[in-house]
Image 1 (tube, rainbow, N blue to C red):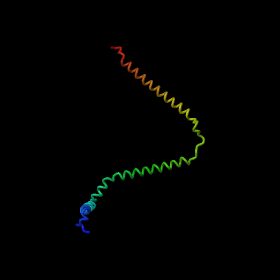
Image 2 (tube, rainbow, N blue to C red):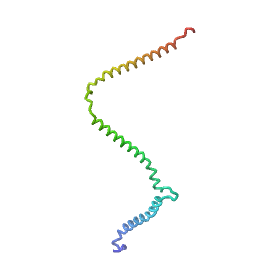
Image 3 (cartoon, rainbow, N blue to C red):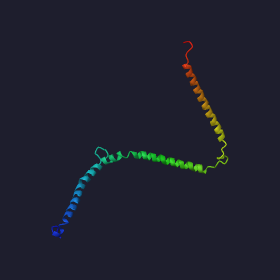
Image 4 (cartoon, rainbow, N blue to C red):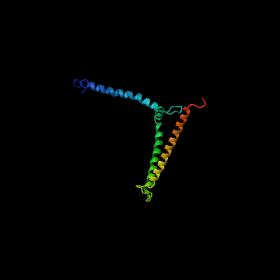
Amino acid sequence: MALNSPNCAAHSSILTSSTQTGFYLTLAAIPFSFIVYTATQAVKNGEEPFVTQFIKKYDYWLQTYRERNELHTKMVEQAGYDRLILQHSPKNASVDYKFNEYVPRNIMVLTKVIANAFSQSFQYRLTIQCSRRLENQPRQGD
């Protein structure tokens, strides 16, 4: 069946449009391939190709991520090592954690520290008030 026959007249527009699209895509691929080829070739004076420069422009964060990941790995390894030491160390049976004998001493020391701070604060305030009163009093020789 020839393309000029009356039975094929309805399909002639479909055939011509698909051949035109393929033709133009092939035609456009030739300069596109040439552009990509020239962009990936090394420059004569020893510089890197444009595409390599473009990629390296955006991979500055790789070194930062590498250093951060190494540090994180070391920290996780050290934490695992510390955990093993704590889990397999002998338990101290002489300390009763429910009724710690050092708590009353700590409370007493803390109470003394708080009392000392209040007394120093009171003495400081008293000194300031006295100095203000002395400044406001008239002098006797005037």
